[in-house]
Length: 248
Length: 224
Image 1 (tube, rainbow over the protein chains, first blue to last red):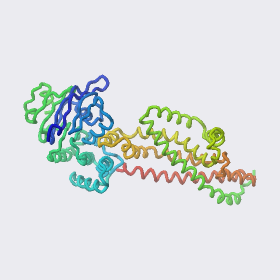
Image 2: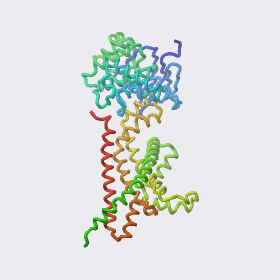
Image 3: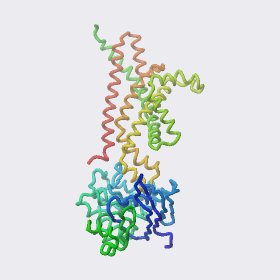
Image 4: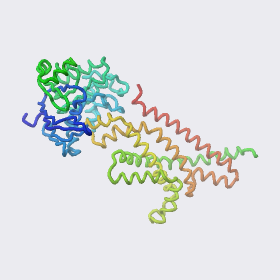
């Protein structure tokens, strides 16, 4: 592994109208590193994730995933597609395909995007459904699943893509409290496989457990970052200290 | 006032029922073409392809803005005078063409509205897993839009079935034309047209039943 492994973000900038949401964000992520982003709401955490796969188009900045570099200023449709195919995304509101069963939600991209045969895709989906404890729900449509089950399918769909970087956008924030545990358990298992992950979450205990590094964001900036015990126990910046007191 | 000639009506039923295949043929072929054309136009209207969008809007505006009968006359009696390759166009073809273009304009707007009604999360999820726009539309967005648009589209199909009776004005002997001919021979206009009305009515009711079945099928992903 040389300099073209891992992920590198340089000078990422995004404004919505007059509001500057991301101000010159730079960040490197090593292969297998699990990075958690915390911070007050409305400070650009979700936008950062959504800019990394161009669900929101950044105004400027360079995103490199492995040997693929995409310049936000000049990114073509093909480059954006290539970038999306190296990342996977877990949505706050699950974002399952409403017209597809749990199994089809997992196989859909394997077949249409990765060109796998239907039987290979089904085999992979069934393995993932077993791993996520949802074998019995393989043929259920999203509308018939609980929030926790839907989010586990959402994570399973992202796992199946074998992406270089998995992005989690507040994956437990929309869940009833009773389902949060099972989703975090599944994310722990993903983390144990040394999958490269970038996670926005408000679950501090979870962040402390699985993160190699925690980033504190405020006002569109990365204010400070470090290993969990350092950032959570000995925050340097007053904004980090204030935030941790509030959520602590 | 005279009594209805029920025996005459009864005898007329099998004669006119024999024209149902032609009626359904024109409506089904028209519907198939109209669905394809309308879907393409609806997707175009959603993405607003430069220049093409102008033509599509003009097309929809014209075919919604003028009566079907006028359009049929234009195709059958008018256009062949300017476009020589249309000289041999027959009434059935002209009717199918007219129905296709006319109804595709309406259907494009219904489908467009249904596409825009598909939740944003569905578009984003399709993009996030790396689908191309075409894959996203075919696999995720259009199937979900179809569920929303289905009742309206079946209504247009019903309208189209009734619209096939206008083929009569292009000299096609379809159900209405046959009834007219029969009535002209017997002078029993009321009886003849009553039978035609009844046949159309029953046909549409059968379709309404199919429509309910179709909706149940399309809603299966949403049953709890």
